[in-house]
Amino acid sequence: MEESPFASLKAALRGTLITREDEDAFTAARSRGWNRDLNLRANPLAFAVVSGVRDIVTTVNYCRSNKIPIAVRGKGAHSPYGMANNAVVIDLMKMTAVSVDPEKKLAYIQAGADGGDVDHETALHNLICITGSVSHTGFAGVALGGGLGHLSRWLGPVVDSIVSYEMVTAAGEVIRVDEASDPELFWGMRGNGASFGIVTEFVVRLRDMPNGGIIRSAPILWAADKAKEVMTSWMGRIGRGDRKETETLQFVFMHSPDGLPVCGVVPLIVGETEAAAKATCDELASFGGGAQVRHDTQLPYTALQAALDTLVPFNTNYWDKGVFINWDPRDTSAVNSIVDVAVKHWSEKPEFASKLSTFILFMEVDAAVGRADPASTSFAGRKGRLWCSCITSWPDDDASQRAASKRWCGELVAKLSRFHVTSYLNNAMPESEAEMLEVFPQDTMKRLRALKEKVDPNNVFKTGAWQYEANK
Image (cartoon, rainbow, N blue to C red):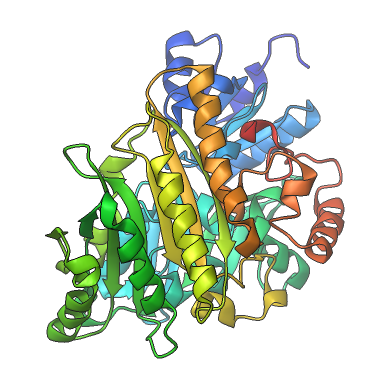
């Protein structure tokens, strides 16, 4: 290490290098992340707020030569791997450009962009690709772990639409990766992409959005004491074999604006007439003797994407964990068991948990997600019918509240173990090799490790999914 740490790196960057010596700027950079819990626990050496690809190459070469760990985050700053102790954080917050080729139906997305940046540009041409379920979630963080969103039942995961990546390797080289140039690396990037390099640009295939981007959505709500009856009816509806892939029906436990616990069905209906979409919602609203509140309406897809933004604000303490489950819809016992687990678990949420940002969400992820050949990508979440995710927020920087929050989220996964088929890397929060094997099957893991040894033998990118510090 040079006598004046980071002096040569700072001089070589067109962007900004913020070190611990720049106390106020460093604190602000550290606090920019979405999850306050991670902001407080992780103490990087510096933040390299890069201006472009060359700054990334310069920083990677510097860190490799000086044996300094690297973490990467974008504008969204949601990922637990976006900060690490005694690492240099390569911050892509200024690399947020999105351009669309409407003729080829392709989007060129810089890796710092968030979902809202993508939706803003694609919607201009009535085109769409999957982003996260919250518009301020970074696109790269979602995509590199597989990429599930509100309409994945129709569009599949992001990885199935990726055409190519531009990326910086551990050797500091800028390469373009696609099926033809390097099929093995292209396979590995689509499911565990954060482990093999730093993506600087995604090229993503887009789909036409019918009805000018207008869908029917927004929650249909019941009081919490109706949850068992309503969820059972919902389970029956989503188990039907005659449904279109353009109909997605999510189930959620949450709180109303006045803080009361409620449950709801969130319809996402694409491509239907307003009358047909409303008829579907009328059926849903009849569950449980009739909904207490109906918000379902015709609205732009981009409005749905931004609807949750204020419910999960930045710099708040969060923990989330989830699992993919499947069952035979004809098995009444299985349906009842899943419903009972969900209803009881919601009743056991920590008393201190934020009423704004505490949810249990059941998102449909069958249909298009499961249609692709499982061997075509390293993303392993192809077999589930539902992605069951538990998220909570706690108000105080208190270790006991953190522990209780982790325990509550983890217990939902444990209670659903009978129906568990795999986990989703982006909210599996693995803390050990055994938990990592719940995300990737043994054969996939073996193949990923061989690829890691080939493209990053010195483990320059050590703060990705195989490094568990961020999850403990």
